[in-house]
Length: 433
Image 1: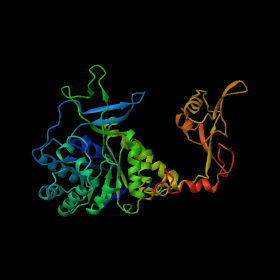
Image 2: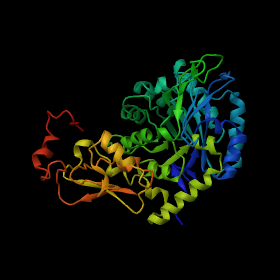
Image 3: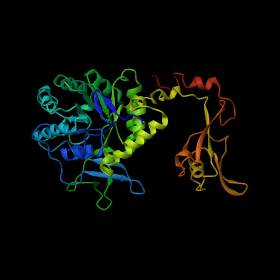
Image 4: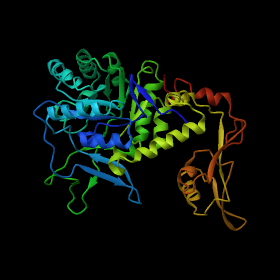
């Protein structure tokens, strides 16, 4: 069987699945249950200075559900730990003593002055923890106090605080990056320049979930007032994957070890993150929705996948997909694909025809010889993949590559001139890189 053991920044764990810094890692009771269930590691909920902050006593979470009531997006307004610092330190020390084979990293957030970092980092490291994660991502509550995302959005602050942490720490320092920015590379580069051993991403996105349709106030509220929170769960995974891949494929940051976070719900999500450059993954929302026992499905699924692919270890999967990520101007415009509908599995729902007729290229018929039947008109199909995306039957519609570069709208070979136009400096679609 494939080896699921993981080593991230020299921190060993029996599998690459860690719990992210969040409510599930708020206390020893939770982390102990997680390790009993089989999680490979945990990042302790963010510690701050004493006296501790105060969280609201009311709704802290909200969710977006699919039609079958499955949670696909999650929002929270909870702040960092509201428990005394010494209580947390005592419990971290106990957990690490009881579970020496599990990774235990501590998330921290302090004011922007060197003396504070120099005071608290050694106290935390004295617990025996394996590493320190710097929370530069929290988008609510703490950012209004000049911490969290307020630091993560300013590369100069990231570098400065990372240097302070590195000066005070002897264990690995991980910088947790915020997605509430325009481009992930400047913050990642700032973390590198500050001496970070690795980065973790993404933290949560600024969000308001909806309004209360009875009161017409935002939802949820505390005593009638609400605030933006941090958005997470399955819905943020594509954003997280893009940012992870950007760091992994860019020469200036490609050597920076990455812990992937953002919507990991099943083993496929873990494969996505690992193949796009992460060395391990952190999980929060899925554990909060389904409980700690999902670790069995995560580890079994990943192990089976690696076995089927003949991949010996998690480390051998890391970065496998990175070479396939490029910029638009480097895509092959001579490559042509067409949609193909498997008539034996088609349920005749008509969704492919409806969306193609209304919003795409009118490339799918709805009748053949007077009978209801959905087929692709090759000369109209541009291979956009919309029909594949909306079809309710998996693999009923697939994309098939064709030999030769033929423009489906003209039937003529795609010329070198058209390919060259994409590289022309006056092309508005062109990107330098």
